[in-house]
Image (cartoon, rainbow, N blue to C red; front, top):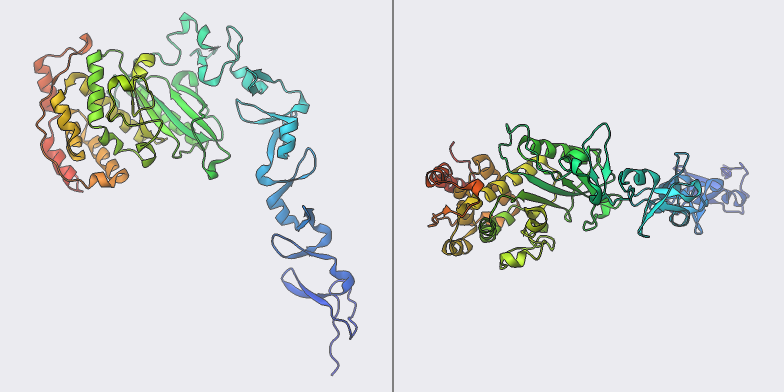
Length: 483
């Protein structure tokens, strides 16, 4: 029987008996090609499959099929050259279009706004404002932060807004009129209700996070967002920007509403947290005496380990929140980058607690603030002597925690949360079961007129907060104490 002649897959030409034609894989099938038709197919350097040569795209002497090329490259819409997708820059034009440019064209023919971080084409006559020869802003950002009094361009973290919704005004710090002083950020306005959060202590807080854009919020009422150069992004977050939200000062239910709103809005714009982020709390100390502030600091220093037990490893030895252990009040008043920043009193009349890791979880924020508020309120009023401080400083972690639970009005719900966080974040600390009743006598500290209390009132406070037996039972077991 005569052997069946080979035919070219492309031109259908039969192969002569003395010629050997090549075979290749095309779309999953093995085909034979004559010498003339073999050049019609080229192997893609990326997927290693054969494709029609006329459809291939050459980049740096390498051949790519259309699919692989589009996954890895784009054609710069400015110069037409190939550009890796990861290096492409989105540039806005005056027509409202967005074009993908290579990094070189974006650097030479566009500018990056330092307000919104977007790129804009130089060819479209955008209104550009340059601040101190270093910062450049697009027309939109420029309009947002122009002082309505002196006309100066205002950096985002120095903007003051009025609360007139019908005619909102923007001021630089120097131009805030006296008539607006009661409405500008960092004023102390009592909450309209205290149903959920019963504390009248004024609190401010700062949330550090990364996201693609600003959250949409009425900044004049709950706070402001600005860039934060101290933060970094992970490899997966390289397209995100670093921000810090600085809250307005609130108390009562207004504080909780504020926390819920900002956490919701940060999440809405894809906000994320990483190990470089922190969460700072400012507690109002305007009413305190020097003796009260010193007492709060010294007790915190003695039981600082309890608070550090509730935070992540990234915050335990953090250069922006260094331990106060071994430092005096005077030392810490010269260095704001401490777990407890007492230097904040000179500038803001607050104590700033800087040790908590970043979070946009409203429940965690409320719990941490409630703990700090209770701690400060207690040790503004209750003195701990030098001798008792030495006892505290050499006590075990569990003994320090028991002291905190016995001395403050922290509710059982929060005590359970604190122990759970310590077990979760510092398991080595939770394993220390040496607990004893501390022989410490507490007496009222020298108070300002606002907090002058009688012995009878003080004893009532101590009676309400004495729960030593229940605390010990809970600390020594994994079960909840009987209610």
